[in-house]
Amino acid sequence: MAIREIRMVPDPILDRVCEEVIHGTDVSHIVKDLKDTLSASVRKGVGLSANQIGYSVRIFIVDYKGQKLTLINPRIVPKSAKYPFMEESCLSVDPSIEVPISRPSRIIAEYYGEDWLPRRFKFDGFMARIIQHENDHLNGLTITGDRRDGIQKSKSK
Image 1 (cartoon, rainbow, N blue to C red):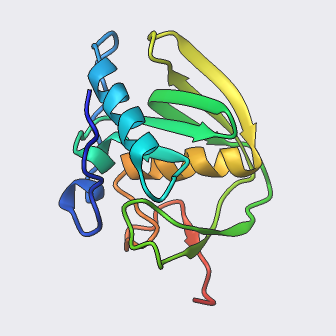
Image 2: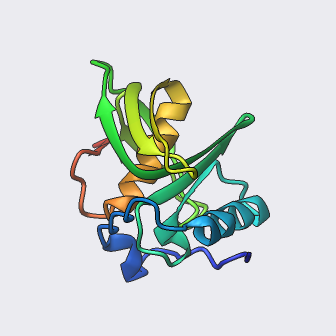
């Protein structure tokens, strides 16, 4: 479809909670745009949310170490007592900025795939972090924003 411009903070679309996608809606053009844009990104990110390219809907993709996922209307359930801090960057934030964020190291993600079949998978480590980061975008949160619902920033920075 198209390579889209990645929206940068302080674009207001990044602060909005995205709309649920009506089950069965053809979102193939959005998914294609996400994949094309992420693939063409100079910064080589590992995930991209629909609102980062101008669509205010609950869809994101992940492309990490050969694992390629499309998550539509995701719901994330923390499954870990460990919430380690790790430096995170974001394609919608100046590349010189990294922020230490604490997140659960294990999650369960419930979502629909591109075929609209329901999925439920456990993720851990960096993959769990990517999914949570992208899901935050769908809730109007960025790593630099003031709305820190559910995200703990380190007090050392």
